[in-house]
Structure formats: structure tokens, C-alpha cells
Image (cartoon, rainbow, N blue to C red; front, side, top):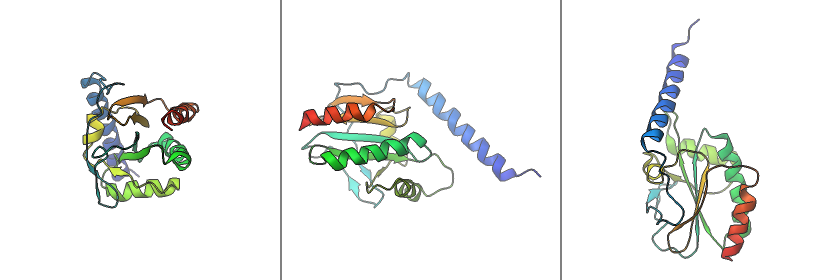
Length: 175
């Protein structure tokens, strides 16, 4: 028997994929670059509080971009949490998350995703993809390190086993 709801969901996911692909090519992949000023933003976190990461930068910032359907994002966030547990006096971390699921409460979906990973980060919710578009993120997960002057110093958009070794070396330089 044909299940129309499953068919609608497949069509929706396919259209999201096509829309993201078109958007990616139309932006000519002009992702933010190392050395440029980081785009400033304010977002609400999953507790509803307005967070302004660039208001008073006292230490470097690590931005981690994720979406709730991303398998590699789970591993990346878990490893980032372990790194942050060791070096939280050296840098601040902001998770910027979204969901491409249809008909879900995005805040609840992000909270569930983070709870499933087992970390106590309170992510920022990019409900309308404003920050993701400002940074022109098209690969997930993406980590961007911003120095105390508000400039982008490193971009990691190809998460692999050596990514956190590289990030840890960078963090140690800031100590």
C-alpha cells in the first residue's frame, strides 16, 4: 500500500537538498576567509536568551556550525566538548545550530540533538539560517576560530580524525 506521508517527506527532503545546492552554487562558494573580520551576529540560545558573542571579546571564539541531521556533527561536538573541558579558560565556544526537518519545533529538535550527544553546551538557534548565510556555510560540520580582535584565524570545514589535533595545537598557542 502506498504511504502518501512518506512520499511527501521524501519530496520535501529532496527539495531542501536541491534548494541548498542551488543556493551554494549561486553564492559561488565565497565562504568567509581567514584574516577577514568575522561577521557579527546575535542569536537566541535554546533557553531563549539573546546571546551576543562579539559584544565584549576577551578570548578567542570557536564557532561550530551544525544541523540536527548531521552524523559527523555529533562526533565533532563531542570532541569539541572534550577540548573545551580542558581549555575553557582559553577560549569560548558557540554552537550555531539549525534543523532542516519539516514540521518540527526547531528549538526542541536542537535540544534533543545536544542531549543525545551528552554534552552541556547551550547552542544558539539559527532558525532562519541568517548566521549560516552570513558565514556562507555549505559543509557540515564547520568550525571557525576567531581571534580576540574579531578576525577569522582558522576555518575547518573538512572534519576528520586529525581536525581536533590541529585545533588543540591552535588553542595551546592562545594560552
